[in-house]
Length: 267
Image (cartoon, rainbow, N blue to C red; front, side):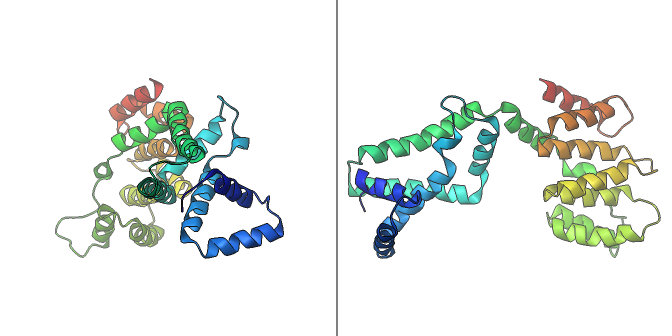
């Protein structure tokens, strides 16, 4: 189906609930018999959900709106939409070398939105994710396994975590922790990091706080992973507060890394 200004206007009226009941019924009957029209309506609908003129003030889009809309580019359904849009454009180009002016500007507008978002997005948002990937090292957690004891249930927990089977890690670690009279910091780290990898931030923070408030020699390891949690959440203030604590104590776990990360966040 070759788009034209009248058709595009009709679609916008349909999506904007501006049709009479009779018009809407007729349009839906036509759409039911035309896969090409269904595809075009779907593209308009998904684009409208992304870009609404009422949400923007020309030249000064809201910061929270920018973050919300930019996050859409990371979602699988948005990537699928982008692929659909690309395929639609190529199909129409093959059928008709001349694309209608209004459709041309509509497609160009989509590209403009993307450029504006990336240009105006606060750099620290992207940067904090980059820093998380740089500073997070799973091998820093340590090992649960005791050599020569292949039947140790802790070995399977470690194997599950290394295989990125985080649900299994949590399912096996929690019951064991419940039976212990004293906290096992390394086991708590495996539990907390599995929660962190699954973005269960509240649960992970509680686990790392358990480590911090435990009466153990390795209690300070909880601070480092708590800082990484806040880094992944893009909570810059709380991340820096925890890093300050580590930086003030040379004997704390990942002391030098904490100072370097703190410097990166301040730059």
